[in-house]
Image (cartoon, rainbow, N blue to C red; front, side):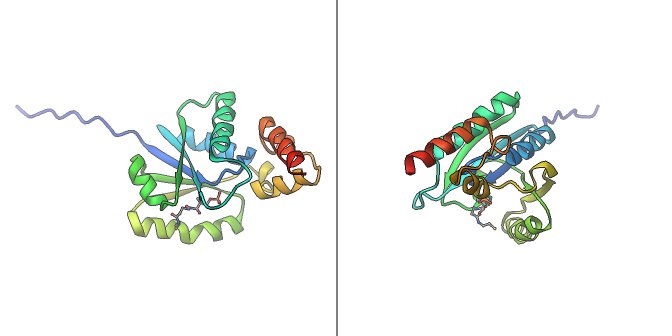
Length: 173
Ligand code: PNS
């Protein structure tokens, strides 16, 4: 009689890394689609404690968490790491895959060597998801610049982020 071996498959865990200062609607679209393709997704907020961002790490995490809760996305958690290689973060989290949203060939050209480097360092693969064309022009830095000079960024970021940007920029003068 043969031996029956039951193998419980390991959950497929992916990471979506970035600065998320702040999260945009383009990020959220990619996060939601990446979550649908994996058992678990970790949004990894990578930051440099020596460099002041527009928002604190805690604020960035809160923006992502509340936006995802509002969209009913359940298999995602958000974690922050500082001054670490992405591949070491992936190893610590037990993640197999990095998912990056790309808004076009410029993003691909920028991301390509990082994907190869990360695979060379660790074997971890990077999947590129084409961003929704509706957000092709949207980046955290551009949204901040538009908001700084009084432009309306409604729809480009969650409403909470828009309001926080306006309040932050008012406070900064
Ligand atoms: O939102 P961003 O700023 O485009 O995110 C870039 C980020 C943080 C994902 C990238 O700079 C990164 O992976 N940094 C971690 C350090 C690292 O592993 N560097 C080597 C990449 S080959």
